[in-house]
Length: 239
Ligand code: UDP
Image (cartoon, rainbow, N blue to C red; front, side):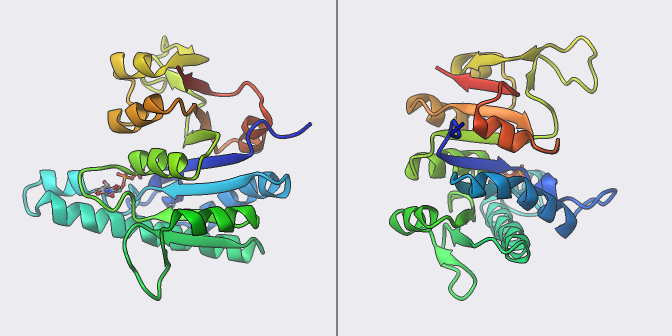
């Protein structure tokens, strides 16, 4: 059976690379696990773009809320931290023998290529995974919004939002045993119920261009492949 999606944008939180029990850092074992989950879909011919956050290293809004640094500077540091994660993932792809390019929102000559839509599409068409680092390149945005932006720019069929839980719940399922899991939601449901799965800017961008979002548990082995093949997993957000 052919995959349901031919070109995807996978959004991972920086926390996906957080070493167990640590407050910050990059765990290369976790990076390798993620790469192992991506391999079968690349082998099946699916084009994969990736955006990773930096919650495992630095978040601008959290840092600036303490008052010692202004948010523009702190967000720039956050964006650079996403580049560190992107390079970590690239190394994990290298180790797995999978070609992967890192493209950044700002010039980082000698570190990674500057984002260029045509070049990104060229990489994808050659079977290379493209990791989009550096967020949108602008402060006051999140990597969720960067994921929506890059997904739209590369013409992805879907934005896959990887989380630690198996979809969107009415409340935090860890804290509330009555929390209900949704199979499908509209963009307006997510915004109206303030479900905090992605920030409102990211959801609005997807809504404006009818880009479906699938929220699923990426840490369960084989889940990513199942979602891409069309299994009913997680929560689908669409119009
Ligand atoms: N960031 C930014 N602009 C962007 C994307 C990210 O300024 O377009 C900064 C911001 O400080 C943010 C940090 O990079 O807190 C890390 O991104 P994010 O918080 O989205 O990471 P995640 O929560 O996904 O790990």
